[in-house]
Image 1 (cartoon, one colour):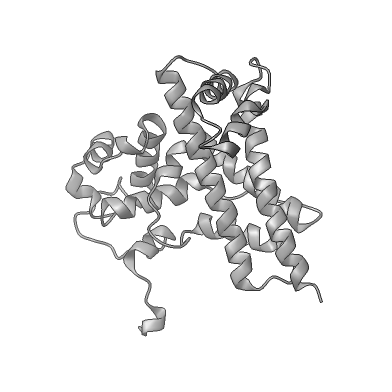
Image 2 (cartoon, one colour):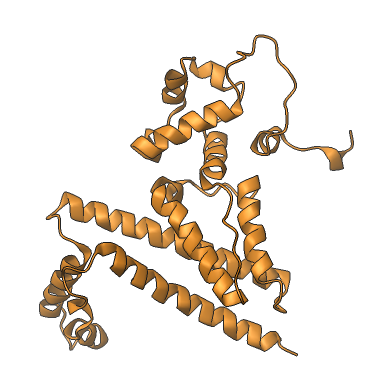
Length: 254
């Protein structure tokens, strides 16, 4: 086997490539079973709830049995992230902008269902089959542009990072509100704006003072569902990013 043919064991497992048979391997245990059990725990208890002993116990095996199938906790997280992400939906769009918009909202929907995914440490560039499938979907909608590979990857990474940060921030704020006064987002933003309007000195922070004295934090009405507010906030940021990509694409036009 040449060096070009070599695929590291973690990548073999990530892509579902068969591993050499080992004596004594429990027939009822394999990588997919281990990963599925870990994802189930994360869905129930969050990422902090996933430990190799807990996964092993849920399957009725010892922790050492798991090491025959996953090399480490870090590798397990990588396997979990790709499995939980799943394949992207079919993104049919009339142009690159709508395509990236749909791609971003589709990815956001996955992370909203499984917010623990936003907390998985980035161990490197996308490498799993589902991650590559999402990459392929984004690259496909940009294939009609004249952006070079570096700018296409940059645009995709920027949007993906925005999606992750947006979902994670919303999840943390929602958790904080639930542990505090149980306020909805609209009420929390209103009270935040009114409090800061009293505290921020316009001589020291003139622009911030103007912000907090505006009506921004008074709208929308307090009975507006948090999901509607979150969608509007997410769309605003996404459109700003897409505007920037549009400028770059315009510069590449012959």
